[in-house]
Image 1 (cartoon, rainbow, N blue to C red):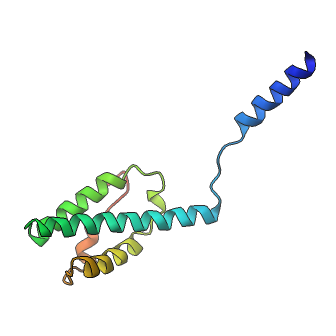
Image 2: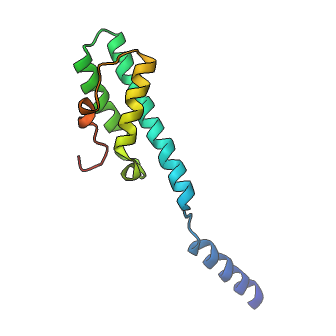
Image 3: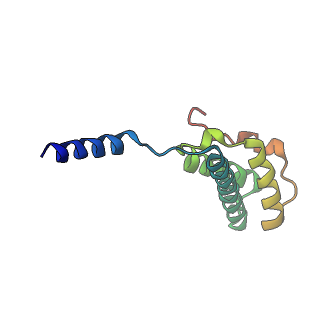
Length: 116
């Protein structure tokens, strides 16, 4: 009986103490994946909006708002390099919906932090 209680106690303590830890490499991979998801979401929203006849300015504002609302609560969003995302968005929009007039300055409204 004593032995059973000791084993049970050790099991409970070891299960309770261990928590998932993200290694630096995993964090970097997850952040890169998140940057790609943000870029793809923005691009899809922007291209679909312009395809429905919304002006480019309107599509830009709509895509900015939709992207922020979808990703602002993600726990890894503070690790995202916003400049990388902007570069990806510009490339994706040029290759997806063939709009080449969007500049990095147009994407200054892309803020993903919860406080923004």
